[in-house]
Image 1 (cartoon, rainbow, N blue to C red):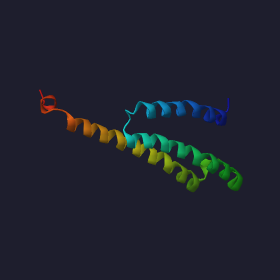
Image 2 (cartoon, one colour):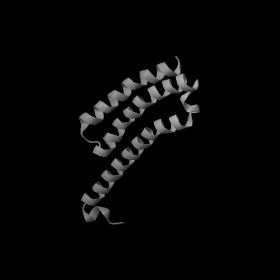
Image 3 (cartoon, rainbow, N blue to C red):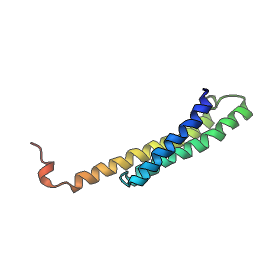
Image 4 (cartoon, rainbow, N blue to C red):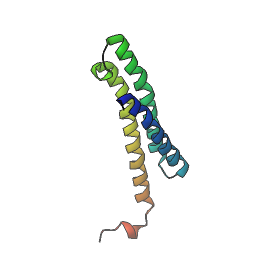
Length: 104
């Protein structure tokens, strides 16, 4: 199995993951948005890779400006996921009663 096929096939489990996260309503909203932004990364990476091959005759990873631009969406996705879960942890700590947050 080549890397393009593996990349395409991996999309289906990820879509299932997103479906369960969304349906559970337990994932922090900002983190969920971050997981969806990862799909934007995928959607941007595919045409960027095709353009790199046609315009530069090279792999996307070898065209720095194009590769960096596509990777920006991966970075954004990661930041949103981290901030979403960070916000949820802060909120959880805030809602705990004082008895459970005192050191022993």
